[in-house]
Image (cartoon, rainbow, N blue to C red; front, side, top):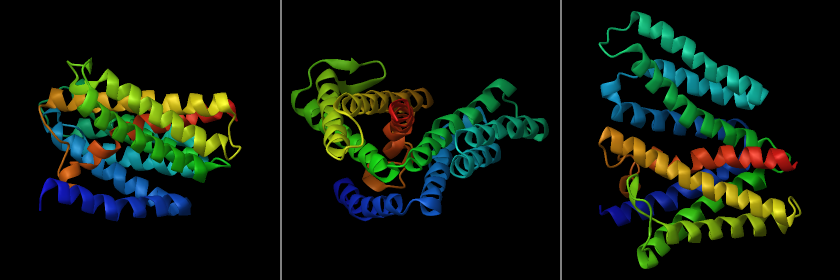
Length: 262
């Protein structure tokens, strides 16, 4: 199957499932987040295997952060995340590895902070009074941002955004993606009376900026680890981490932006 065909198949099958589980919320969404977190962490730890991450500690910490976010909010989420440090320290004490403790435990904690907390903030946002609409808006804004940035960057891109991090990104694409994300947030949230005009515009801008940083962040990690894609689970889309890199940063930005306004 060609990359294009696999991308279409994954989109046609995957997007409705994700949207439906977001619509249901509750433990359905927690389950989706848990599967996504474990898959993305697996990809990251495979890429970083030379750093000898303590995989069980990373998995347990990410799941604890997700459960904490769903059951007790931000405080429990933080507690679940801190479990990663304890488990990583204990496992390092009994593991047979020649890698330094700083590198081993640091790479473990990085994965949980990046992926586990990113998805946990998505759960926190879903628990908002208007959580269903907010998460739908977030997902659509990230998708619109990525699509507009890619298309405009390919057609009109001339000025490199961050050539040493991701040579394919351009300022033209970034501005087009930002405009798309702001438009989605405005029409989805102001028109529904959830946020004011300035608030909806600020939320769109925050999602766009954080999403771009998230994309660049993964590019830097992959370049450092000398890999092209995080995995092949999603065919032409690459790995799970390749698909949610922007969302991991954007969900955090969206949660705190909404919290500041409501």
